Image: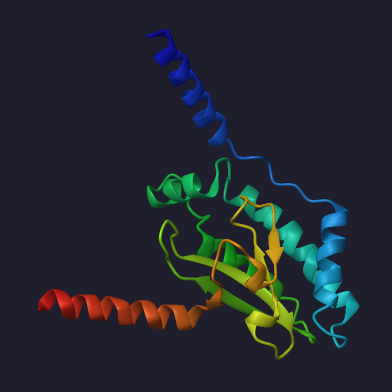
Length: 189
């Protein structure tokens, strides 16, 4: 019986520790690394725009974490939003707000995109912002995902992200509608 209680205590501790969200952070080194990656999108990317975009992506993500009152890991925060305990903070909220803020900059050499990863086994649908060189597709850009770590910005090339299958938002939406229509037709018999 003591072994059972010890196991129960260990499980409770893991849940307690796993349920805590780390406070979002950023360093100048983080911003500099993203600036360099944005500049690498192409020789015609204005260095000042790359630096401004990187700074905004990181610092505005921290601001949104405060505004959304992020105190838990993303999935738990999502549950709070869905149950009316928080107003915003779903991945689509982060994406909408970050894109809105970045669009205020009227970049001449950069483009912004809304990317979506369709639902998969053990994965819900996920949205994020992508920044690319002006005229390039989202596949050629860099994903900017502040939701994943509750305000600490995650970024990478879309195809290098091991967790999600990023695609254009409308492509995923149209595919989801086709799936729902096929399921409804099959259910109707």
